[in-house]
Length: 355
Image (cartoon, rainbow, N blue to C red; front, side, top):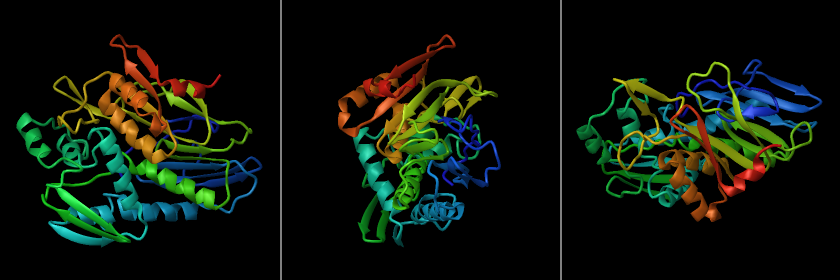
């Protein structure tokens, strides 16, 4: 798995919460009906749900589980023998074989997002995440000198830290600093949704919904013959009953949401959000609570949602407007300082708001 995520809860089988998803029934079961097939289970420390809105399918839970296992064996830092674990545990140079190609794809896409966001999306931020106590539920705010020390080996494209060369299935990896580590938690889950998406396409399906830990891809029509309807949660802390802030109607797109309102800790009266600025080494302190991104692939939606939580509202809107070639639409929810919510959306997002 890629991180410790809270179990998801499905709100309804047509309107689904982006931030909190799952199954009301047995999460390990699969069921068939005249309306199609639903397959649910657990992966990556969270849950997954696949709805195939067609009368017949030969897709099984075992096949999906096999995909997830192969994916974990490449990109999960919680699997000691995974490709990324071998690279992270190396002391200098190492050659690793990855026949799946998942690591190479993730690394390449991460490079692109890192460059376009000027380093605000950075997969080498893992030592900072660990240092701030977000890996082991430790409430340990870092001191300035510790942050400065850790920042010395944070920087995804800094060749003073590492170099990588891809030759077919081979990954030639050189590490210049033992403390340098990669963690694709902020993007890999979205990539795994795309892996399932490609699998269902190869199976000949064109009407389906895929959700893993809140990251989503939708194709074709739902079981009612209309575009898929996805609910966006009200970004409130410690909610017992989930509230929908809005509903979007969408198809042939990927959706991902990143937020600070559930994962944080308070120490000596100061709130520390889990979103860290890789430039400063500190948790972000702006008012943006959640960023929902619609993109052509889930790996891009996931990665940019993370970057936008670092940027904040104004910079995110500027970025989306200045990078129209990325085909990103965003819906941002911010705190107004008085207990209310301020909504901001890119012009292209408006068409997705359900009537």
